[in-house]
Image (cartoon, rainbow over the protein chains, first blue to last red):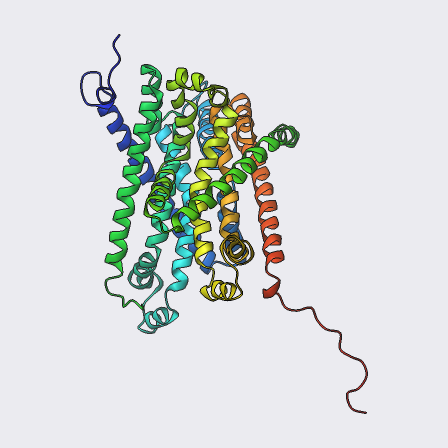
Length: 240
Length: 241
């Protein structure tokens, strides 16, 4: 068999892996985006608990962020993947099903990423909330806004404005973390490269391609977050 | 929860701690040298060196560590004949050295930015004062710039060390049996994910707590000028007689 050139290998021709790699890149983006959104929801509630909770809620929230930021992400992914299968198996055996029930890798991956990034996002939101001036909140209360309305009109927009740089960092973390989900067999970018590397015996070519694709994604997202930051600050006067 | 199972798990996982610490500390030590080099390149004012360091940091911070590990461990296998000729194959054949290399290259990129921040935070007056006393070059760096920069960079560098301890878990993917590797093996043997997870998580938390404490102690030791002076015993005799 004649050796394919690099561009035939990763291209879109009959022997090329181009489409497979592109689909896998889409999968990486999808699982990272889902995980990031789950993390935003988790992070919002945890930040709320840290700011406004009583002692019990506060220590629970502090414990959550400390623990999830202190243990490796890979362990959390294993917990969700194997723990989820074990739990499903236990439920299944109640209904007479037997043996191993696999949890969808996408679901466990997105949940694991969400739970981990929730801890980081909680800290980002908490930090951003502390920048929102107390006068704004007092003013909102004095015109008779209730909690939800105040959250929606006053707190959320301002917290988001100050949280954008931190959220950008978290998104980069999430993106890189999504590569770890390949251990559960989800065919995202790294897994697809692994498969292609195994079947063509050209590991370097495929892993370097994966690295370049990841670089493009992080580069584009850095740019987009910078744009979002300038846009969100358009009404603010810069002290320079 | 089954406590005797958790106790057994704890002791099996404990046997992975030396490897975890070994990987993390080796990578941090080599990575610190690399990071210092990169930070000095960025601040050298020589455009070529600056661009090289910037590109290096961009590449290693923009790609997942697992991709870097696979690239070194599996990817370089594609050039096995060449590497064998160069006598480097014995190095790249070992998963341990591949993991150490990937972790070192990775932490070098992150830490160089931390060091650069520290170096840039050194007040100009200090450097000027040192120059006025006749210091220059390496003496100035060793006595004035470096100590101040280290003190500034230490908190951020502490988080980087903790990130490294967490990152060693990825070495389990290339067959290294450190704490996460043993945990994964136990989980797939026993299917008791929650118990193993709790014990493994506890071990990592203890490790990271210890590192945080050590860094805090270092910070305290390095900043005597920020501490309150020790209380002076008041003199007992009356001031006026």
